[in-house]
Length: 221
Ligand code: TIU
Image (cartoon, rainbow, N blue to C red; front, top):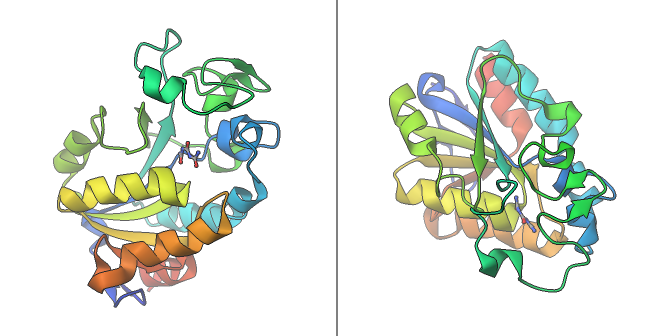
């Protein structure tokens, strides 16, 4: 079985029961001028994940392995967006407002979709989620159970928000999660560093942390 050097120790996985999860690599979060930047964030901190993630996705697909993509967003009438989420803080733009790439984080808008470099192909699953975690109010659990997936290679943005929430949800549901440091990004370098440490601390309290080249080598052996 493929094995990867990771923190806090080796991560061994069966490719037949492992999915690559790509969280929220959406234009609104990653593109200059988008929602993420309007919150005062430095999108270059996220954009460094694009190249390694594209390489990983290519290798993963070449081995015929499944990729599941997620997108954070809401219905056009915002009926699935709690007021507490909508009204939080004082951003220059809110969810549902007109933004540079259409209405911000609204399903069907250009900015809500995945960046060109990492677009899903073929029958890859795309989960639309209203929350930060990929399990909340989605059918991700059923999809994983049906396909027999027990391990997740977790990538995407942002490390301490949607990646962390999803890894915690997955860990509580019994999934083994390997988070790839070069394929997850935070707008805040200190959160990136500490967010990854939090996952692997205490003997891997939420999961394992490694780098994507180690996974690519492992599946090609
Ligand atoms: N996908 C995700 O992490 N959503 C966020 O809102 N992240 C922020 O860091 N704001």
